[in-house]
Length: 360
Image (cartoon, rainbow, N blue to C red; front, side, top):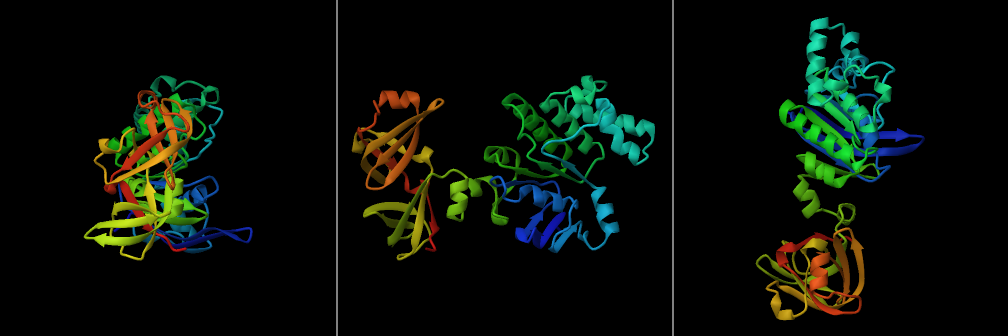
């Protein structure tokens, strides 16, 4: 039985549906990430799952119980959950008092409060900050206090809303390291929302892609980023080579797809006549100066139309009867003397292609 289950959930605000027919099942101890662009509905969904708001229709089951059927059920369930906001607020008191306030509200014994507080302070690396005024902390330190405050009640589910969105790279790395440690050691179920796709990959065991209030795909990080089920998901996860084509031949699992008059071979279950999108990740494209230096099934001659440096990498755009974008290191670009206008050969393996059904 799933620890948290969402069934046909809809949420309306100001006459418009912010969330549409959401269905999710989250297992105990799982780390589930909701990824999607700003405004997709991620925060709203978290607030509904944490029972801070009530859906317009649908059901939320926690531990097999319908927890939105009554205020009593909601209150009992919420005591077993914790929520860390994107911009957490801290009280004008010490770090220790911020962390222990929820336990005091629950009238825990002083020795239990102290024991639990010291444990979570250690978890988030804030033991030496226990007597500091919380309002004097940096953004990263404040986020660590918020995480400790959420963990001190020993929740069964921890909700995280963009946990590093407002932090600098160093603080982001530290908070992620703390979260990864908590996930390993605590075995707490975590549901997090993030627009940082790589963060979702690093921390989550499963990912749900949310866009315009709808769940477009749920799967492992590898399934989401390597095998998106729709063009919308492919675009969001950064697959920049999306080519329209039609399957014209099939031999076992090897298909030939016509793209702008060019034949691309791919490993796919599609059949002859299927209209498809051919998805190729930029890092799976190889550049050479001679055709016979590649063993890949797909080799095309083209001319470089644009080169853009991005940190240690170079983005190479090539026109080879259809547009292709590849990524190489600056060293490789220099060794191959790659430059705008130069003719090159681009190659990619049949197994590097992911083909999805095109409905229009």
